[in-house]
Length: 436
Image 1 (cartoon, rainbow, N blue to C red):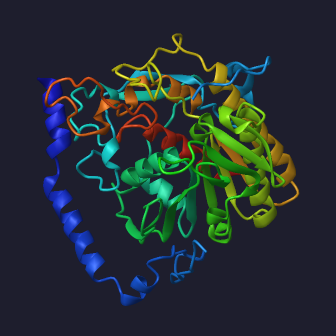
Image 2 (image 1 turned 30 degrees about the vertical axis):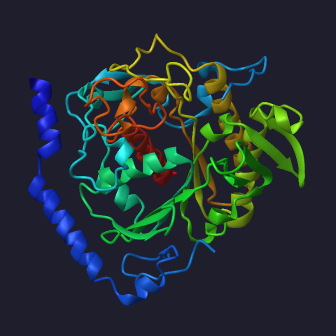
């Protein structure tokens, strides 16, 4: 009964507020000046200036896991490289917390339909009431106003895969509790490139879809069954807009587990799980390392110290069974800290990401003001098998009984949900930078 009440409250509270927000948004949309329509197919960038500076718009947008190296690390052997001068937020446990999330599915309009777990009929709400407790300190609750003040007159770009989108949508929901964002750009066909503007702080948050970070061709039902990646060429779809970025959050990894063909110097150097192509079979660890190295080097060389870079570490999936063979994720409780450790493939990917950030820091040291950090979410994500949409990626999957096969999403995260914690740590990274 108590859980039903919580569910009802989350679904229906503040309906009047939600109506007003939707009405206000509709009015503002109608009143947008004609000049915005002319630039609909371009991103809008805001020049960095003082709080009294007017806004200037600028055109934009010109499988099977491989074997591990013999030295595959454990989580504990690498964690000391992260957060050198502050608490290690990456190491801790999930503890019960009745305070719940800052927002709900009815009052946030930026949540993807497949991540609206409650609206899609998920019956349990316990996954909303856990808090990440680092071993060495406390992680403060997210402060939306503090975040907006920190990014005032700035442009923050989330670059990468669908988990970059998932994290940005979580962030938008939390920020919208104090200031409404305006969607000022979306790509006309695929909706994979979007930008929101917060007039209250002249801040821009953008999404750039680029699952490989480098140039490449995604596999599709109509085309080849494999991805094609050019490991030594950064994807210009986002890189050409570097001039307007103040901060970049990089997210990638899961697309590298799929069959792929790798190019370097214009030549094929190997492939992953493409036996019919007669290429040299190779695991994805070397390409993944090369991709991150190319990305960070390109940012450093082009921006020369005028941007902050944050690399989010790999977020493990929780399929019980194969993801493409009816794998599920039906757990309703987090793992306890002693139940799971970061190991195997997850640990190796995390190790590569941390090493390449450390290498990039050395390369960037000659440029004043260039800062790189790791947003280390691997362990806290690993311990949350209960936080995915699972079968509730679709509305009411069991409304007509239990079908023979139900599609599950065990990679992305319900909103609200555990991914909100990523943005709590993100804010702490920003606050730490302000003290330097």
